[in-house]
Amino acid sequence: MGLGLYFKAVEVYNMAIQDTVKELQERFEGKSADEVLDYFLKAYKGKIALSSSLSYEDQVLTDLIVKKDPATRIFTLDTGRLFPETYKLIDKTQMQYGIELEVFFPDFNNIQKMVREKGINLFYNSEEDRHLCCQLRKLEPLHRAFQGLEVWICGLRRSQSVTRTDMKVVEWDAKNGLIKVNPLIDWSEEQTKQYVHDNHVPYNPLHDKGFPSIGCEPCTRAVKPGEDIRSGRWWWEDPTHRECGLHK
Image 1 (cartoon, rainbow, N blue to C red):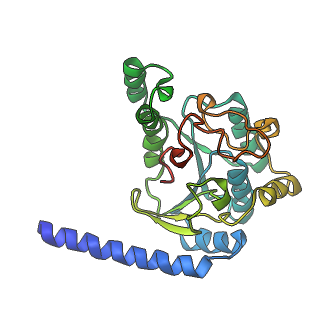
Image 2 (tube, one colour):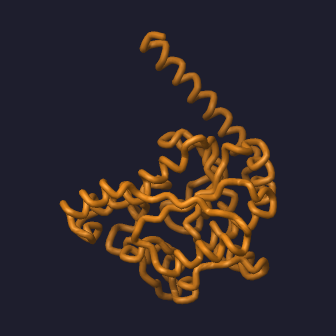
């Protein structure tokens, strides 16, 4: 196949995928998390996974998914800078649900080079350095975890931050070449916490200490009552830029 025909084929494929995603967006907009998961877990069985950060939202999705199809892949990223409470929650989640969370790690060669050249806490130096750290500790292992997938389940909610207000229940992630599904996109924080309470879902005890959003330990802090729930993440940066790159 010539180069021109190749790019034409790619263009046709991308247009077809985007048409499919648009149809799915319209079909599932406003539908319940149960309805969304029922469809995607069956339609994409074996090619779908939940990427879990062990947040309230991802723990809710773990509970919902395991009740529907416990064989569904659920993976998490160990950046090497997580809170001790997060590691304990991985164990607790596995024991309670009788599942094995896949844990993906960054490439140690890349991390050693980064730390040697820029320091152990480079993320405080500049937004560029912070994004480099996120790229090597999160995005690179995430891309490995995506191998063989067609659908990526996320625990995003519109009310989480100003960077997520326009997100939809079904999206096309062109960067990763995946359909991205957000079953809890319309859920409120109160609804999420109530589900955790009512269904005895294991959660990170840091949530009870003022940490609504929990990532790497150096880049996460508690927030005051009434503050934006993402304000404790990369708090030294502009609020409109506070994403690691996973959900841009």
